[in-house]
Length: 199
Image (tube, rainbow, N blue to C red; front, side, top):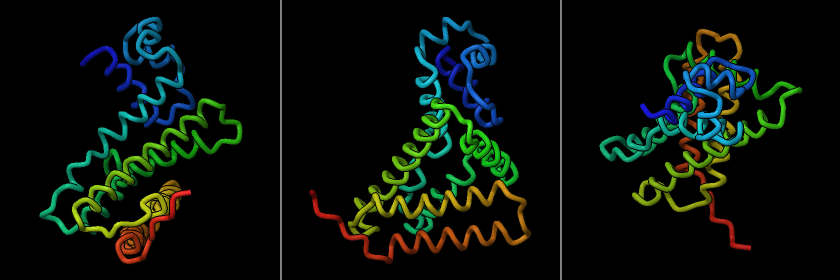
């Protein structure tokens, strides 16, 4: 593993653990590199956070599944969206992750870098979901339409379910999540999302 990849891996692990902020010293120590080496690869803390968030999405949510035409399109999209809820493992681990993310990003005293990190996280989610929808459109499995609105619908559902993940779970919770997510995916396929005219 390259030095750059070690640094990203250390930053990503700290985010998953709910570190309140990714200081250069803490990440450098975790990666077993000097602070100057880290700064060589990531001149600013913002660069480091952006790289860690992007790497998290790329590793946890590859696009191969959405391209598997042996699986019905709705099922493929549902499975991919589900990965947004459980990107790193079992439901219990996902609950801990969402609890940590909510704690990190929703605190009133969150600093500018933390809030910017949340913006990157949302941009990565929008980029990934938009790409999945475009793949289904190109395949002819999804009618042409306003994918920005479709993405907004799906991510609004994911946001709600992720907040629920951070709360105490009922016995029926996961079953209800599957049903809710399936309804959202059905809406993407069945509801007309006409393309908005260009301004």
